[in-house]
Image 1: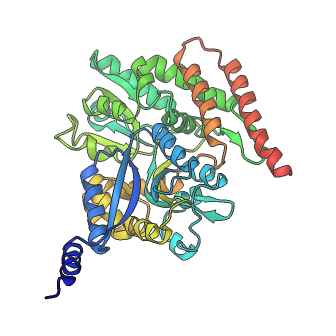
Image 2: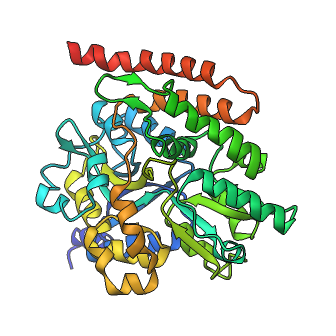
Image 3: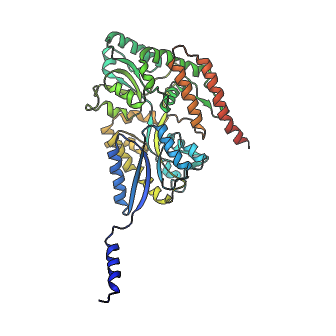
Length: 424
């Protein structure tokens, strides 16, 4: 063999023995309580797409902290982030900033109709669609069936009725560790979800989307806030609830130390798992109560997948989004995690309903859930509302009238930006 052929042969053998180059797709996600399930689904995508490697970048579980991580990458036009989870209140912000890729060419109206209306509406801004829902959330009331039955109570339909039932049970049980109500009243986005449900169920709103003016200073809105301060935090719930997010408030309930509990649909699975809950089998769930003369209101929650406008692989990113939000994957997520699917047809799926019969009754609540107002300035408005609600309900003698006026004034200044922009 000629000597000059030996290096060429060795070179060929070396590179032919190496694994083929992989195409990386970077997926920015939050810390999940079901990380193993997500990893298995991603592995299935990789198996169906040889040569593709999905690299997960796991951020914090807090929605606020995860928002900071994602916005930093988008603001820096980071080309390495392809797909990311997006909270239901972010699409307008990310769309207006030019950060999220419009999905109209990938996600046509006929396909959008396979999903629940509310999350699709939440993902639309300026006539375009920016996210595909993975699962949906809506506020629900969980309660101790055994305690209500013990004292002859039907599940409460009105907030004052809930308070009266809790006071009666607490007085008769005489359990120093038992509290009447557990929810999310820490100063973070969950506080807005909880307070919005009280306010809307009293016939009020957070702000008027037509006039772009705050309505927190209106009497019905202040009455709902005052009720939470005086009848919930100051009466049937211990003050530790002011520091609770979802996990802490649910832990109190599953330890058998709360009569009523507000949370998202996933809490059903945890509360009825004997390995995690002391009250498994003794839990009921229903729509949240309302104030007399008004209708129950539930805040829409949930997460969607979005594609960065700065991704170098938008077509591959869409294949990943399409796979992750498919009917088969949503069913798998639902069965594995107890998450409420975003696809309407899955609420008629026999296997899901056998495993989670409560989805049949929860469907109407999920369909009627109210999105938080869609606006690119939601974040500064949310910061104002969080401070107002926290101050108003934390102090027994808080000046709710003054705090509401101040919050409304600050919100109007932010909303003025939208009016100025639309006037140009």
